[in-house]
Image 1 (cartoon, rainbow over the protein chains, first blue to last red):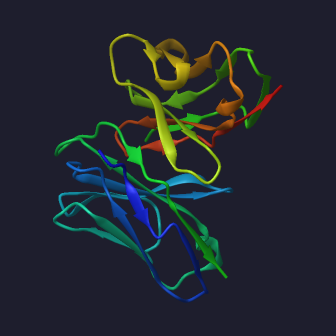
Image 2 (tube, rainbow over the protein chains, first blue to last red; image 1 turned 90 degrees about the vertical axis):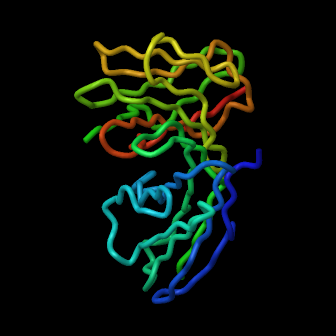
Amino acid sequence: KAGVTQTPRYLIKTRGQQVTLSCSPISGHRSVSWYQQTPGQGLQFLFEYFSETQRNKGNFPGRFSGRQFSNSRSEMNVSTLELGDSALYLCASDPALAGGSQTQYFGPGTRLLVL
Amino acid sequence: AQSVTQPDIHITVSEGASLELRCNYSYGATPYLFWYVQSPGQGLQLLLKYFSGDTLVQGIKGFEAEFKRSQSSFNLRKPSVHWSDAAEYFCAVEGNTPLVFGKGTRLSVIA
């Protein structure tokens, strides 16, 4: 099976712009989670989607949002970008069914640089 | 909510030497425990996981980890380190909230 894919791999934006990142989970996986990784804060959970519904949300401002489509592909959006949003954004998919989680498999990430 | 601590920020070992990376967690019940490895510029690769049962877990690339409930620990071990093991290692715990990661331990391997 193909792994988790994320596009684009690299992105440069300026402050105030918005950005959309895409994630395609492993075939058959219905759960997708997003994480932000920075040198200072480490890996932080953003949100989790299962069957197009947000199941969990981390402690991030409302500028960070996401959605999941019927084919389980997911997007996350960050509006009004700030310098501190520069990070590696990781997507993970999970084969677990409703009500639980099993094991998360990560994509290569999208590296976002905000200037 | 659960939390996880990796006490060692950076460890350097000689190639061929044994390795132990420490991980301590905080959670009221038995959590799900994971070790991931990240090479520079890459995503996270799952090394091994513990859900229940045998407390000694075997993973990929010759790694193993032991769950010790009494010490709230899940230390990662490898008997003989290879230069290609140089990377960052993350311990993660899942309890009543989604995955929480430690800050990571960077492993350097010297000849």
